[in-house]
Length: 280
Image (cartoon, rainbow, N blue to C red; front, side, top):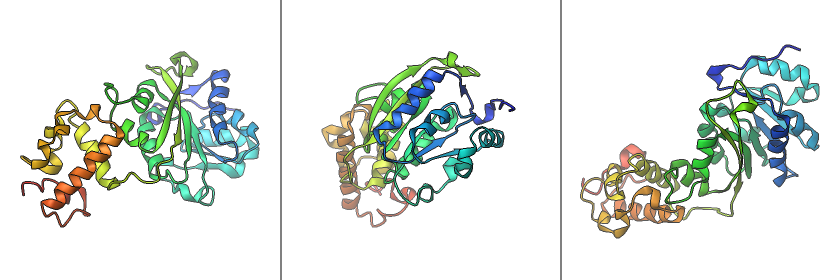
């Protein structure tokens, strides 16, 4: 059986430590009754342990060589090997709209995009586990006040409980990445709704962290414009990294009220239409 050569442009780093693979596979056991979707199985080092769990498992792989290898190595998965780009897939069609656990040794170059897609499908992804770059894992798990706390931290923690499970050495991969890796688990919390305009929430979080060293009074200007009375609130003396998820929700509600007060009759329009209305 011909081995697959890792492709740099796909961000492939094949795990070769079976103990680590087994430990990653076991992270899905939080929801033992749900089917599993593995992203980027490569040559199946993680897959071999997942298929032993007596659960429906599907794998999605964009690399045609890896797909060919998987079909030969795992004939029992033949009907469940999907050759496609995960980021472009309609996840509601995978298991007839039913919830599933997402896992994988994720390509470093698209891990953040994978988690944004998870958030877009949070109604059917109650648990997401897997291995990513250590720096990204730390960012996702970071709390307010941390230098690594940022956009991913807030947007994910608004909907998921994040567990940083363990660190993985760069020496257990082929080829070895230049950084360490980490395994995390994200489990849906009990939040059904944020209690604010969720699109505006994302915009507020992303806009303020784009200038994270500035106070909110300055970083919020792309949304509220200059000299908006709202920014006189003491909350705006803080920097975005100091705000908890709950405080970002409170901030979003205050911003929405300010925009309404300013007579923004296009509040439900696009983000470009709803910027700078306090001084317009």
